Amino acid sequence: NFGARFLVNRTIDVLLYVDRLDVYRVDELDKQVVQAITQTFGKEIWCKTLLVLTHAQFSPPDDLSYETFSSKRSDSLLKTIRAGSKMGKQQFEDSAIEVLYAENSGRCSKNDKEEKALPNGEAWIPNLVKAITDVATNQKKAIHVDKKMVDGSYSDDKGKKLIPLIIAAQYFVVKMIQGAIRSDIKISGKPL
Image (cartoon, rainbow, N blue to C red; front, side, top):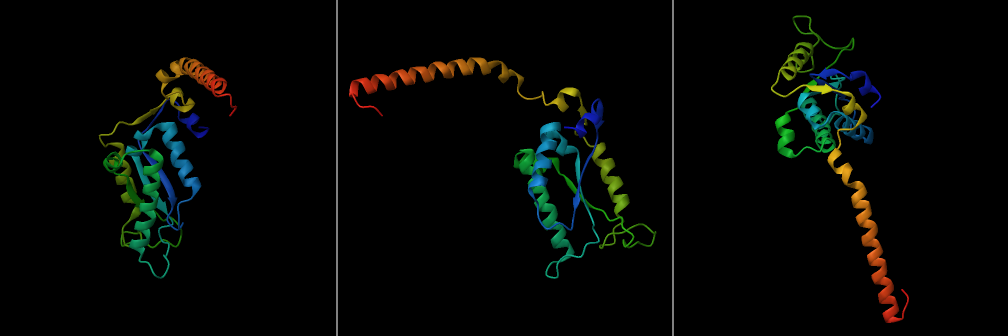
């Protein structure tokens, strides 16, 4: 929530969820980040998201092709996002989070136009710019960040009003059950 405070009264047109391609597994921190994003901005934020994997010049282990490794890595992150966003399968598929690859190191190869290119020859910067433009202008509503969103007061306010009533009802139900238990003990003459 600390970082979200800087976004108050701003609009999020695109969220770039950036992670490394050369990491072999999803860890607990990834899950916590996804949950925090969802709790702060709502699951709708994932309809305005691109998954960007950096270090795209990475050479996968010998037994895997680049395509297989990058696909497995992106699939594992997408599964984590789906689980953390608490979106249903169809809703998540409809959000269609695009996966992009980026490499900006000096060792990044270049194509004929002198653009930094991925191992498959694609120039990644124009692809990223196009994807950002597509998501920013897609039919999904941009996320307006207000103070309520950052403070976490978008939770079910209607249910909060019922809490005292529920606590009182629980108290009386517990008292009735305790009375019935005491009565049963007196009748049977045996303590529990």
